[in-house]
Image (cartoon, rainbow, N blue to C red; front, side, top):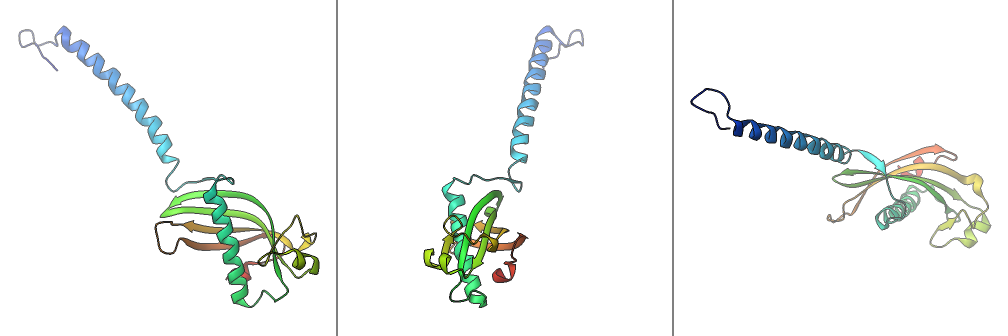
Length: 170
């Protein structure tokens, strides 16, 4: 700021500079507030995911394969059993050390002969198999880290409703 040494008061130029500075400061504060709101909403916050995104679809696919592998390894998936796959109810996402997907899915295990006959690679869709009493709702967490050697890290499996399958996961 320019100060007049003769009168000890701020000069006319200084008043305009101060007003301009105040206006710029206010604009900056408003802009920073808007930017801060956007930034605060992203890192670490859980938000609705896009079910149609290739990344979310791949995460669902990886979760299903992992469920099948764990169910087989636990000895709870009998030779005639198939995994009954229903709708993906929702996908939530969270930015962590990678992208975390919290997948709510209708899932089950059935030994129904009709379902087994229609299965491909141990999976059958609930639209093909009418044995929906074996279908329940479950929440499964997975973190995608595409830059790592192990691209997916599997987290919690929660039974929400229907037949309990968490023991197949653990």
